[in-house]
Image (tube, rainbow, N blue to C red; front, side):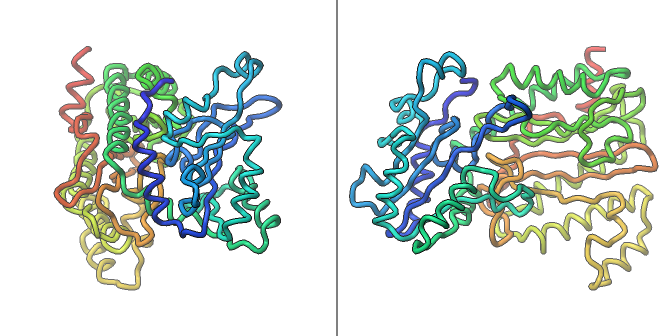
Length: 440
């Protein structure tokens, strides 16, 4: 295991909170993810279903959880089902969890092999008429229906149990996962710390003539050696004009003298993800124009963290308009947009933010939830909540000038003042230059 196992108490508490929201006459079923197949007989690395990990801490395929808080037998209120291992599996795939080990990881006492799941399911279905099933309800999901074990199980239950009341588990889990507990914050902090190590390595490495993919390789080396399984998401290493391509993933260009390179890169740790963006000068020194744009973006990021993000603030109706005005003011200061146009557009109540002129230079959102998923679950009411983890990522992109600047930190939202999990990662332009030139 690359990472230290989170305390089982984290998952015990997560299940307890979910059990409080389940009706007494209901049970819920959550499945592990599939092993993703690449092509022919080849698979890629396993990444656990976020909800199952949140409830059990089990990082293994072919795992299922049944929760039934109203069951008269306490031993049947939580049942975990595992793939039974064998000598052949151990030879080809390595060791799998034993029942005892699964109890230690999850805090669940009743652990069974998968071949008993069907008999348990029939008994639960006989005694309880409400069944809560999981489904990926993320607003931005484009995954086709029926591709996950949860999807397939839901389709099967709709046929097998037509008289049962099938209900949605996702809204309950989303409500729980928004708020991060202290153990979760520590996991996020560790992911951010590993990310910091990778970024500091890059500051000593980048110079004119390096390829973007060489930077990616340096990051992978540093992330993996400190216990990360993988990048939190596909890394963006975008030099020069590539920085103006928001989802640039090729990472194959040479970084040229005088350019900036935008790094949207981060590590995961124990399935919890960081999300960092920094923009640095390839030769170690910002030009005056580059520094002006950089400092404009940095001012907006600081104001978001210090002034705009608080529990209760509506993200779309309050936060986004406020940040948009700050961005507009900075774009005016950079000579890209005139004040008269800005004032006229602000006064036009029929003109949506997405249609205002500043969107030419800033065309994406400023914040999203972060956790087990990089774009984590979001509050149903659309407001920031206490102990929610969010990113703060303003940017300005000058396609005509061949560069863009984006900066991003991860914070824990708090009424008493937000906790910046990336406060120790260099971001001030002077600090960036000092790091980059110290070894040259």
